[in-house]
Image (cartoon, rainbow, N blue to C red; front, side, top):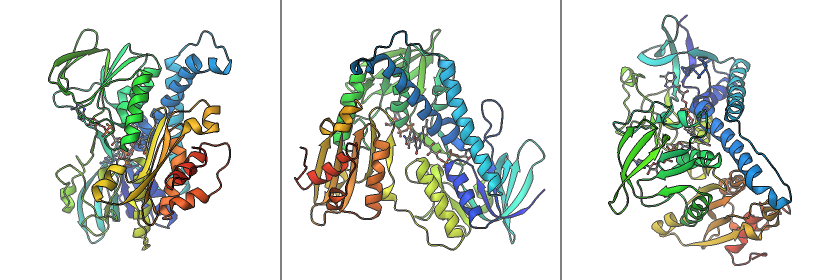
Length: 476
Ligand code: FAD
Ligand code: NAD
């Protein structure tokens, strides 16, 4: 039955479901439209992140790390392990169970917060005195609901290569690459970005021979150069074969798998023959079928919905958040935008400091950073000081067998304000939280250096790196 809502959210990924929960907490009558249907045919909340992104990839990363550990990294502890075996079906079932627990958890939160879930595809059909009209086409007869405020959180989908058909069996994007039924002998990956490195690492650890083809000449161009260099050294030593500066040509299915023609950075032609191919060349925002034009909106030339720094579109009461708008395609960025927009609708003065959004790549070791890279500071002509501390000099890191990597701290040369922190290390995803808090509070290197850090812990490296920026690290 058609109803009028204070807020309708379109999309229940991390941006949309968080926006819906926060709006409901603030006392609004909230509906959320979500069309996702999982592999078993059941409607599911949680979007890309919970169903085919962050959560399943991290489950497989953890499983594959355990497998590698059991095979290669226990002997040094004096622990002998014989007959390590792998049951990919069981590993996948664990992943699916984690995903289900998470998506059912969102269903519970929707019920708890009295959010109505409209199962189906949303499109704008018009606007009137009552608000914006949104049609929901699900399994039954389409219904039109009205809302004074609309939050568009339709997310993104994998970008594919022109002329290359993704079947998610042999030629895959993230969805297929998270669900191989057995370990392929040879895996090809196009794109050495976040997904390529994370999922490439999963299958390499499980036993595949993984070759990654990257168009750019620079490895991990978004990272700090020192981190990217260290990552290259470690990942290639682990056995990932990465070719930079390539031009991918014809991709064709063969009897046994896939053949990828490419030229290397010197223009020499090659052919990569693999059993499975993973295409991870970025993601594109979802606006098709949303019929934005019905209310006078249009995506920009790259497909994103134009918004200001508070996620407001040009229309009153219409907001857009998450992957469908500018900024990094990260779940936590979308979640923060969801909270911000719900609070703005409630008349509050919420904002986000986009400079304080952390990035994490869940390779082994992990890579995490927040704030400026040294390259950016140089380009901006900002005077800075840098301090670096290696985990080889950290007792906890040696104890847990994770001596690789370092923390690098960048501070303003004059004021000592923390400008950026870059970590490559085990647990970098957790270590970076201290840097994010410090930057949100405009802390200085001196502040970090004076804070007591538990011993022995990996976090001591953060303090030492901050001290190193003033040439007074204690353990260097
Ligand atoms: P989405 O999660 O894409 O959700 C959008 C939802 O809207 C979808 O459920 C879709 O069905 C629905 N929808 C779209 N159009 C309509 C419509 N017209 N009607 C109804 N419903 C609609 N980010 C991290 O921060 N950390 C990670 O570790 C991480 N790992 C990732 C691993 C992989 C393999 C991938 C692919 C991504 C990963 N990401 C990670 C990125 C993260 O998943 C996205 O940034 C995040 O999901 C974006 O959230 P969102 O809510 O904007 O969109
Ligand atoms: P990405 O932008 O991280 O990397 C894509 C890579 O593909 C780039 O290095 C690009 O130069 C390369 N590329 C593009 N076209 C190419 C071509 N024709 N041939 C060879 N290489 C080509 O994108 P992704 O890895 O697909 O991930 C998509 C998004 O999902 C990312 O933007 C990221 O924000 C998000 N994500 C985040 C996490 C995380 O936070 N840990 C994990 C996975 C995905």
